Structures are given as structure tokens and as C-alpha cells.
Length: 186
Image (tube, rainbow, N blue to C red):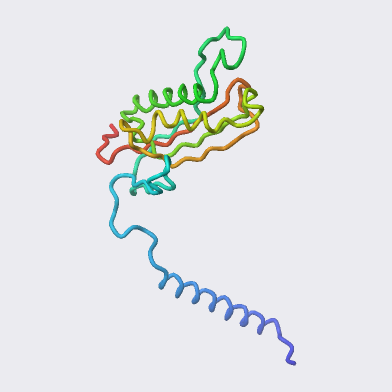
């Protein structure tokens, strides 16, 4: 067997790298473009018609978005003795948050119909044996989305967390909304 010199190792390395680069170039040339064949002008929602949420949303190139920070529930009764007196259960808190998000959107000339994505954090509920009240959140969602008044079905993630900043909060929501293509940003 022949012993490789330093120069031979460099040449062999260059040949291997060149072959890898050529393979990648051929792969890129024969791999179809993943972009839609026709440009889209408004967000497109994908997923099962039976689902209350979308599995994905395609955004047109250059779409301006409005994104909220984690929005939390409003106080119902500051003097309440329990979290349910002060803020309500998960459904009540979810409705409060969605109402707050709706107000933020309105200030931007947007509505809940423009929401494309929600990220939701739910904390355990002591009244539900320390379990997450996903059902309560789904009931709140159903009053704002996938309705006759607002047929939008957002893409959505719902995550159970150990707790939120305020121990009275059972839910926190972030929203992403897309400005319509005809929106004047001035």
C-alpha cells in the first residue's frame, strides 16, 4: 500500500470537496422549487375543513405583520378572594385576552379576521385537579374564530406551562396579524 504525502492528502481532499459541491449543485438543479407556482396576494390558510384551526398559513412576500407580546387577562374584581373572583377561569381569562387583543388590533386598523397565528400558554388550574383547561381555552377561541362573523381559522400552538408571571393567570396569548395588501402604512 502506498503512503500518502501531505501534498497528496491536500489533492485528495480537494477532489472530495469538489465532488460534494458538484453533487449539491446537481441536487439543487433537479429539486423542484418549493414556492407556489402563482404568487399569492393575501394569506392562505391550509388544513382540514373539519378542524377549528389551520395547520399552516402561507404569507405573501412582503406582507407587513402586527405581533402582540404575551397578552394577559384583565382583572374582573381586584378585591376578589380567589383567582376565579379576580380573573375568572381559563375560558373567562381567554375571552378577556382575546378582547384585549381585538382592541390592540383595532388601534392598528386590523380585526380578528386578520389574525393568522396564535401562540397560547396555559397554566395548570387548581379547580381542575391541577390539570390544564384546554377545553376552556377552546371554548374561548370558538367565540372569536371559525364563526359566521369571523370564519378565520388561525394556525395555533397551545402549550401547557408550569406557571405564568402572575400566579392568578391561567392563560397568556401572543397573536400575529397580517395587514391587508391594500393597507396604507402612513
